[in-house]
Image (cartoon, rainbow, N blue to C red):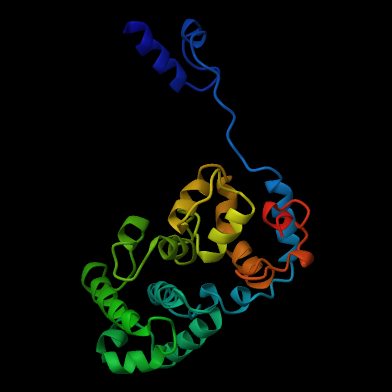
Length: 258
């Protein structure tokens, strides 16, 4: 029992630490798994995204808020744009946010607005009726619990009605300038599975996020969402992807099967 305890402690040390006698009992660490050709694939995607002319670049969430507004108002607008963006094209979200801002997009203004008016403003975003309910509920919580600001942690953000993990990580990134995790939407989920950037196929975006964070260097986490979203909007489409236009066609597992 004593020898097993020493062995487990030794394994916890990094190389060059601990007793020399104990180091002799430690097992070599397994090399971290990473996908084949991922660095070359990433560089190719960066090259294809160099023009930054996808819908996400021009009308994405980080373009929807009023950058001249007070920081607290700006953060609230970021969160609302994320809530509206779920299952909605960037063009539709951007237009809805512009209409909201024209009516005065603040916590107090939304709380004063009746549900019918709010619904008319945000229509035709996806599931707009549910989003009216979530926006009113979340805004009331922000007013009561956070003084009109948004939470500063992912754990608190995902407790808000209508806010999921992807929105929370993007809110941390855009509103608080903090990288808390990889924001995985349908584009990131689809593309990383096609490229086999996950050990085994994943079924849900949250499962994909955990798989990516297990190996992808943290200094790439902020970049990967906008990079792959735009790539998914222009080239790696959900149906009939434009493999013949893709620089990764020779090193993409999915392209080889077409």
